Amino acid sequence: VQLQAYGGGLVQAGGSLRLSCAASGRTFSTYGMGWFRQTPGKERGFVAYISGNGAGTYYANSVEGRFVISRDNAKNAVYLQMNSLKPEDTAVYYCAASRSYHGLSYSTGIRAYDYWGQGTLVTVSS
View 1: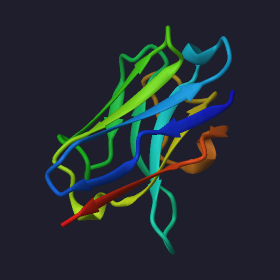
View 2 (view 1 turned 45 degrees about the vertical axis):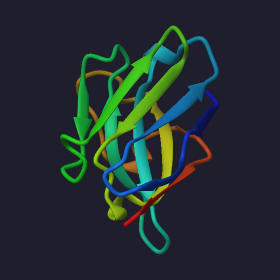
View 3 (view 1 turned 180 degrees about the vertical axis):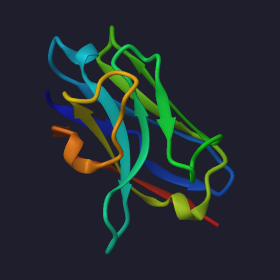
């Protein structure tokens, strides 16, 4: 599976942005998908997860209620709608696919994910 994340950019605090992640391959629906983010000098951290069929979603406490993860298996795509953005949301955002976690069980650990996109930068100005 090859992943390509895009949609990042510069936005003012309180604004919205939608990230997209395009995936190759015919078995996209068998992968659980996650979004992670990373800032310089910090470890890559979990943001959100969605199960293979889209029935299960989970969020980091820091984004719960502001971000929404979704997927369109017909288009081999996963999305992250980010609302009420804060300066602390500034980071490089990565999408990732997990073979092991694709149902209602999920993992926030980067080692659970087998494939990664290249990252897209989101900058939130105050």
